[in-house]
Length: 60
Length: 432
Image (cartoon, rainbow over all chains, first blue to last red; front, side, top):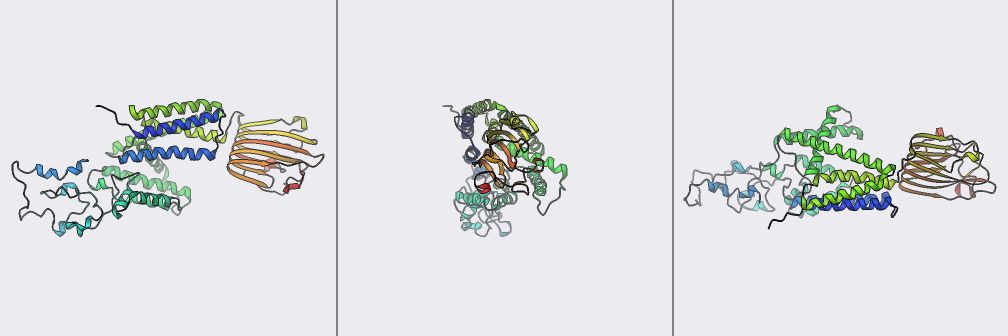
């Protein structure tokens, strides 16, 4: 059976970026108030998840 | 398994067909398991130097670092253990994986210690970079790593990068002796790093291949720079909703590439789009008011505007000659990036509310700074005394309320000056 192997790096990165964009959108719509205190951890979480997925993918 | 794991089979292929395997080599040949001391292969010996008889299948292939405790087997007992950067167990350059294998401990322990040392004055980072440069790569030792050209080019680029950056730190090796040539090399190094991040490929091969990848990396970097500036500007001028939607679409596209493939290159541009837009949103930067320096010096109370707005620059509202009557006068200041200065007469009580994404607030002798600054200084005016209520919203920059000449006040000039008497016109005075 020819099944394409799931690449975790774009999956994690894409979901992280989409979530980041959703928060930006909510901030623009005044649903929430994005501050640096939240942006910093949020950006670190997205970048960290991408790097972690990259490292784990290389280990595999 | 990788090709090097099949090396033990290779010598057998060279044996005459039909000939049974020889358990013991002829006396004239060097022994396969115990070579002479002068020719005893170290763990760094390349695979091509393996004895003709081949190693037994249970032995690690030549070039591999010995496993923990390997020194207790056969002739390897006297061979010094060699430290290599791990090829198979690596997150960045395989330094922690190599150390863990060398000491026979869990790599996670070494990685946690390394990360902890990074926050201890950056010692871990320097040690890691030094090990990256000095400790040989496991694969390179086995003769299957990047070519010598790439290694030498990388070392030269790193040296020039350090010598270019160090002068900015004012370190002991100061002096811009690297010149523009070093700047170009740093750009090439940056391009290689970006290419490595974007593609996951290491800069191996001929110098031409390395330069080509450096160029592609720089092209991605340039694209990211354009996207970053564009996203930040679009968000600052009110197009943040569109940018957010584009970021979501890019994220979904990248995620779809997990199955469809071919979207890894989009990760960096999408991040370059998202992060600056996030910074502008968090700082609440709005550059609608234009760019430049604006000075307002109302000569009467009726000339005082309720709102003063500026996108980028220095905004000065000098109320010292406005002859404000008793009662409240509300002023809204909206500044994207820059400095706002409000000058008042000593007989005016000032109440200040300010929200600053990143920067400082200085109201007479009181100051505060940092990121996400929320300033609340509510005051009650003395009877028959004018009160100015300032509500400032600044993205990145500073707010200064003073009794000095605004021309003599700069963003770095916080604190009480000779002419700044403080909020003496309020109940409780400056300490109220």
